[in-house]
Amino acid sequence: MMGDSHFSSLIRLSIGGKKFCTTIDTLTRREPDSMLAAMFSGRHTLCHDSDKGHVFVDRDGKHFRHILNWLRDGVVPTLTDAEYSELVREAEYYQLLGLIDGISSVLNKRKEEEDSHAELTRTDIIKCIQSERVRFRGVNLSGLDLSKLDLSFVDFSFACLKNVFFSRANLQCAKFRDVDAEGSIFHNATLRECEFTGANLRGALLAGANLQSANLQDACLIDCSFCGADLRSAHLQTADLTDANLEGANLEGANLKGAKLSNANLKGANLQRAYLRHVNLRDTHLEGAKLDGANLLGAIR
Image (cartoon, rainbow, N blue to C red; front, side, top):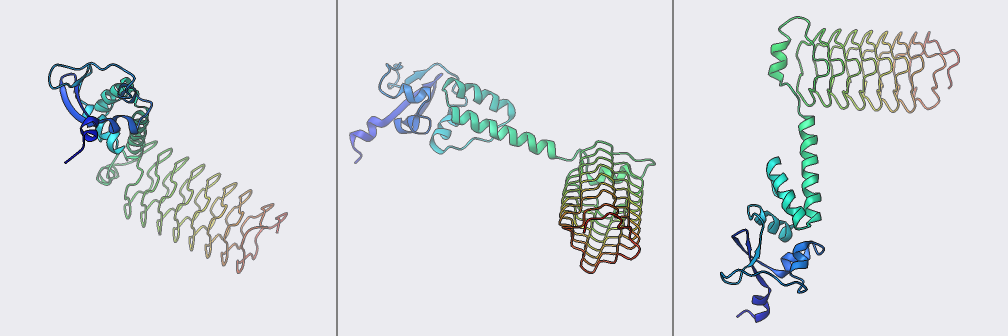
């Protein structure tokens, strides 16, 4: 048999006429500075209705079950944006600052996820490339699988291409000017004569890709993998190749004027006839690299 202390801790509430039953501990423990905690601290006179002694609160009871569940478990419910707006108003009335912060975090995460969603699907892309002079300038295509497609001559300038799969795609002469392609996969893709000026390719995988005569001037290539890639006659002026892996890559005749090669891995790379004037190679790994005919005038080694 339960003691009197158990029954005395039970609280019956009428929120705008909706009935709820909970405990003083639930109402005071999680949010001790809230209005609800203050109401049941024993310092205030409470308004009881005539029906079984319920404590009456003149608020809409629609969302009060979510408030009770928050006080019990600390879990923010899954609601629509409009319902969250209504719940925030109730949380503000009851001064439930933890719940308000929790809803704000959920809404911010939801917005980030919505912003990261691609605006087009793979099917949309296939339909588009059947027409001439395709442009996806400034479009958000993040996360799409565009592998093995013929995307030659397509203009992706200024687009968001984060984590896009371009593996084995034909991207010859495509334009990637100022794109954000962080973490994208270009494994074994054809990228001959592509334009990547000013592009962000941080952490991208370009192993085995054909980048002959590609323009990568001013591109962010930090932590990229170019293992075995064909970069013959590529334009890499002032590109940032810090921590990039170019092991076994073919850079014959490539222009690396002003490129940053700190901690770059060029082991076994072909740098014959490459332009490396005044490039700092002190922290670059060049074991087994071919440098025959390379222009190393003023290079720091």
